[in-house]
Figure 1 (cartoon, helix red, strand yellow):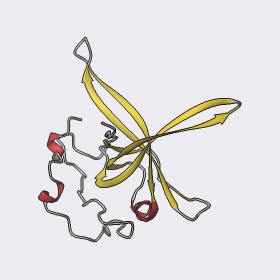
Figure 2 (cartoon, one colour; figure 1 turned 90 degrees about the vertical axis):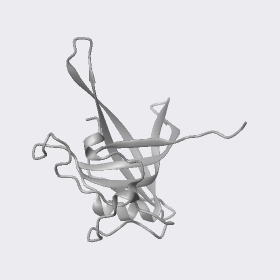
Figure 3 (cartoon, helix red, strand yellow; figure 1 turned 90 degrees about the horizontal axis):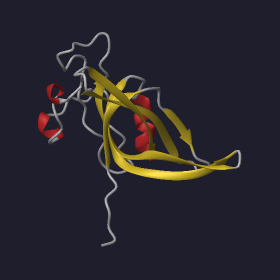
Amino acid sequence: MADGLNRVMLLGNLGADPELKMTSGGQAVLKLRLATTESYLDRNNTRQERTEWHSVVMWGKRGEALAKFLTKGERIFVEGGLRTSSYEKDGEKRYRTEINATNVILIGRGRGAGDSAGGGGGYERRAPARGGEEGGGRAPSAPAPAAEDFGDFPGDDEIPF
């Protein structure tokens, strides 16, 4: 069997404003820094948090469209695959692993000082960008999608943070 599966799904907050660049060939590339935080109990039953930082890249018109909406602190769901590349720095070979995003769903602002701890405070759900490269995403004035549009995506009260 030669086929494999390379799929990543992340739910987290943007740690910086997105960076939109154009390649020499004129293709847009959007670079995102995404923080995912997990909560767990240590041996002493003390709640601990562990934050992982991820480099996310989205190519094409969808990346261009998302650059207009996303800002630092925004809570997003990212779906895509891992890509590893190598480069040389100071004569030493180094590797970089990124998430090549195929879908981004805007969830709303991340939990912060103004949000309630009970879940749901300050969140706004919007539909994912759909369609081909022409699609982009929904304009902010678009009506909120029905709950069925999100399939098995957990509600705010089900997210274990």
